[in-house]
Image 1 (cartoon, one colour):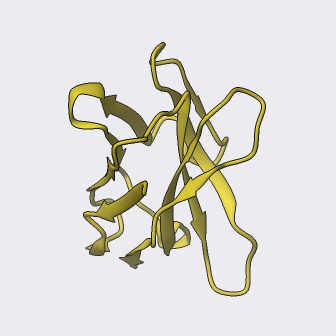
Image 2 (tube, one colour):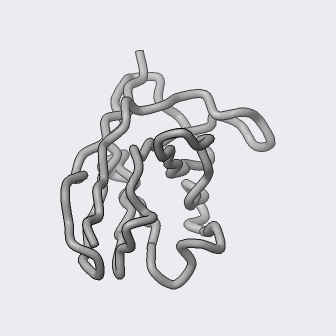
Amino acid sequence: QVQLVESGGGLVQAGGSLRLSCAASGRTFSTVSMGWFRQAPGKERELVARIGWSTGSTAYADFVRGRFTVSRDIAKNTAYLQMNSLKPEDTAVYYCAAVKTTNAGWDYWGQGTQVTVSS
């Protein structure tokens, strides 16, 4: 059974940085892309960034471009989200997800990690 486990969330002051990790486990784990999403209270879940697993190609939402960086370590089956210049509006639960095939829906989800940015 495939599991995604996020870590690295916490409380940080505005302007600070955090690095989230998403470790995938399971003998059948296979992915073409991993993504980071977030959901703030009262808002819908939104895509923050994604990375092609074999290509390393990346894509970002406009509201994080230039501040966040997504990366992966294939050997460790782990994706990362480096978050710099954090703003109070970045406060949310952050989730990672993985998709098995191209142009398909997200197959696996982590449990989420809370990121709180104080002003």
